[in-house]
Length: 378
Image (cartoon, rainbow, N blue to C red; front, side):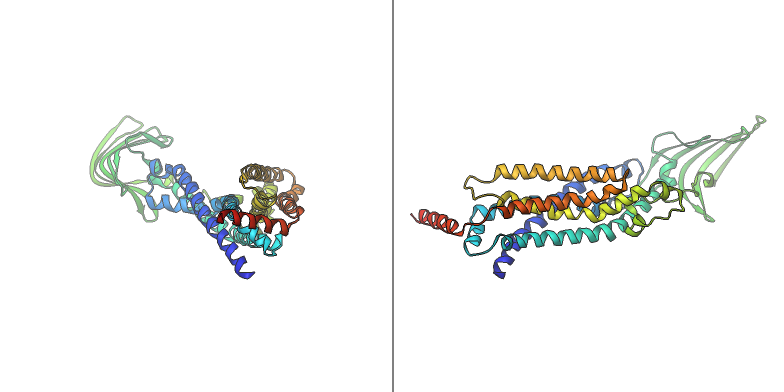
């Protein structure tokens, strides 16, 4: 019997892994297309783009896993049943639970891995992602200049650069500044580059000139080989990284610091996110039970199980949508968090109850199998 258990488990594990990889690749491609803004508008390197894209993967995988389990289980179980391998298991004396236990053990293992990912890996990756996006957003080189465009990074300051190369070097730079006292300064330079001097952000300009018109209409003109333009007023040093509920660890979600105004105002959101982290892995078990119900929940059919598969697919989609709606509702009412666990648990119970409702008639199974073998030989 253990040999049959391992065989059934192996037949299910392969499709689950392949389906997860395929769906993750599609989702990753979609996410990467959305993240092209980092390269196009923010002028970040391909390495930053790849890092940001990969940091989204834990959340994508958690969303995809129940779907992958459901689709892969349907494919594997449908093949096993249509090729009469499951019928032979029943005819050999195996109970329904013994036949479905490899699939349920696989779903429980996937759910446990998803739980670990929700508790530890997702918040760690999202914190790193938030820090990376913060650095991109506060990158002076990206916010100060856009190639071939006049930009106004701050009131009274206009910047233009004809071109920006891959190393961040600015070509044919133009800066016009209106000072608080009404004086204006215009800088032109052949080259420029954002850097730091004595711990302060500055713009190094080479081979240029400066025209300054004072408030008394006095014009000053000078040329320079190298000039340092102070960017400290543009640096938003007072801006801090704000971690969203998806970035926080489980203890931060269930036990927030109520002395902080934001956490006190969003306590229900944090609580809903914490319960969703624990409850969402249960959908892997629920979807596996639905897949088993689609194939084994009814009698043997030589015409296939398309109708039952479509029906269970619709039920699975409805169950997951209900789960998302319940999570959203929990942000308004804390007591509804119980439903986040009830939805997948009730779905699992109903699917398994349908599977065990019909008893196995081994005599009929053996007779049908013998007739089919006789027909095949004839």
